[in-house]
Length: 415
View 1 (tube, helix red, strand yellow):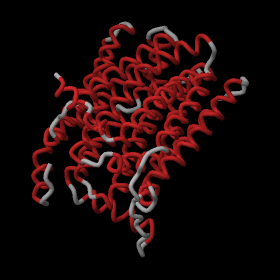
View 2 (cartoon, rainbow, N blue to C red):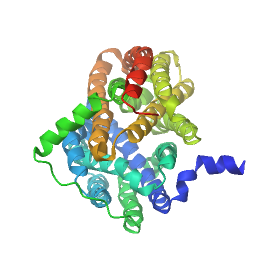
View 3 (tube, rainbow, N blue to C red):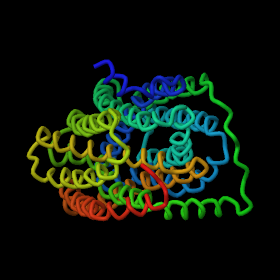
View 4 (cartoon, one colour):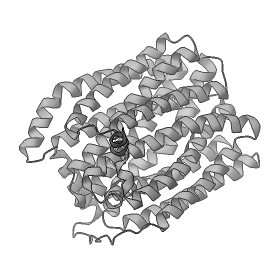
């Protein structure tokens, strides 16, 4: 058993990653307080599934538009310094949300505009943060464990955050969710500042500029068939399945006749499944198995969303959302691990920006489309239709997988 525990948390033996893990663990609770509060506030202010989708769209779509440019710039910049700056801006954004909510002046327009500002911050933060993992974890053999632990942390907060947020909303109001989130960014900033980070070689700009570097990144990804296929799978499933959380306030309120407590249970169920999935990967899943695992998760995601049609109550929906949360996070973490393992360091910022683009572009588009569709057929039916698409995509990727792996290994890339 001692060896088993070491295997589960072996990336924590690296001091910089321990600091990051601690600071991030505090901050992510605040992040999920804000995510809950934004969804709940939008629904309370508008009672509209369309506006739920619209707020989700604005809070993520700018990331996908800016991410390719941000990725090229992150490959030039000091990644450690970039993350510190993005965290300072994120603190200011959450503080603005808190001020509007506590003073009673918060509107759906505030949620859209400030959500778009956070999305711009995320466009730079995500590729910098993901590629910075290689600097925090000196032993590359521990990198998959670090990625999986990071996902575990995110999803542990995803369980605790909505539960705490539901209680805060009932006791003191939405504004304090945003205020606590703003304060929590200090933990990440402090952990980053006290790290001992080796100097990062700064890559000078190339003669063909940022747009040329973006083209180089696209050509590079297209030339790695497995990475290209995984990013395509991620894009489609993020669009169809990644937006499910944006409709949960309507599912809790319209379908099940509940409120903040029921929404907390539904969001917490997805988070619990995601946490279990991330811990499964952290326990030492072999790299070679990850592509097949990603394919199976696409299938499970579709099946879980379709099965929600059969749920007569919140308590029956909870285990189904557990499966949805597990499938989605394992697919994302498996893709992240494979990208970080297979991609050259000089290209990592650009490729991670494409990962961010797939991650962030899909969900807002899906939220917008599914929010409009939910107005016609109802939220639970809209989720089921998205599940059919995820199921078909997962089956198609599983069928193509042997050919993608063979072509990638033929290039001399081992995994």
